[in-house]
Every structure is written in structure tokens, then in C-alpha cells.
Length: 151
Image 1 (cartoon, rainbow, N blue to C red):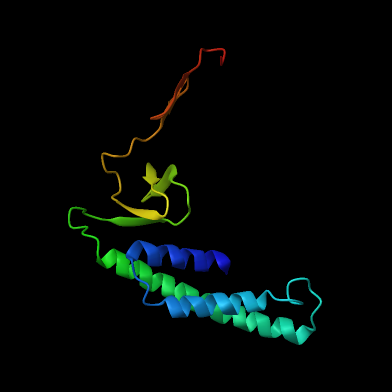
Image 2 (image 1 turned 180 degrees about the horizontal axis):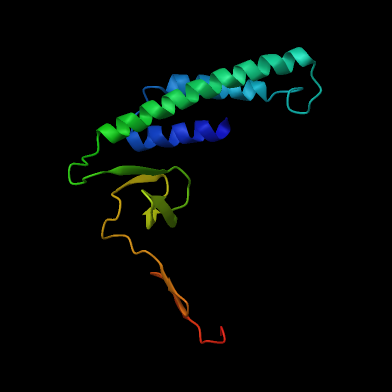
């Protein structure tokens, strides 16, 4: 739950939209209440866990709904008219992500900034696919050549 609320906070910050801060505060308070005293260590009665599970489902559903609304708001404000088929990638972690992504059956290297987003298009010139032959492996960072003995 905390992970979802962190994502929601990040999207609110990226959007500069704090109109739902009271809802976020309420979600945090309810989440922290569920972590209080006997619920976490497992020393409550069965009814407490049944009620907590219902509350977690409600909180998770609401957090995901607000995340989707924040994503939609962000996407609505981004001009993607220069893309034939735009894809929006989110990275709500505090570290930039540079990794390979399979998109429409093709592998592409993508770098998404920390606490940000990137609009990409499949197979755009930005992507350099790795290549391999029996004696050579190569990508944008490294080229490894082997002799016939495998060295």
C-alpha cells in the first residue's frame, strides 16, 4: 500500500496537482492505522484481520483510481502529435532507469529519468538493438569478440 501511495505522491508532484491532498492524507492515515499495534505482529483476533483485509482492498482500489486519474491528467498535457504510435513510460523511482524493453516484438533500449516519464515510439532511431553472431556480441555499450576456441 505504501508503494502505491508513494507513486500517487510522485504523480501529484510531477503534475503540480495537489487538489487531492486531503484524499491522499486520508489514505495514509487509514493505512497507518492498519499497521498499528496488534495487526502487524499477528496477535489480533481473527475479526481484526478480516476487517483489515476489507479496508486494504478499499484503500488499494482508491489509490489505484487516483493514480490512474493523475496519469490521465499528465498524458492529456503532453503533445504526442509528432509520434505515430506513442507509448508513455513512467519511472516513479528515485533512480533513472536505463534498460531494455520489448515493445511490439522488438527489443529497444530506453532511459527514463528518475521521478519522471518518457514518450517513446516503437523502433525509433533512438534505439540500438543488440546484435550477435557466433563469434561476436555487441550493443551500444560493449563489443565482445571470441576466437574459434571461445576465448
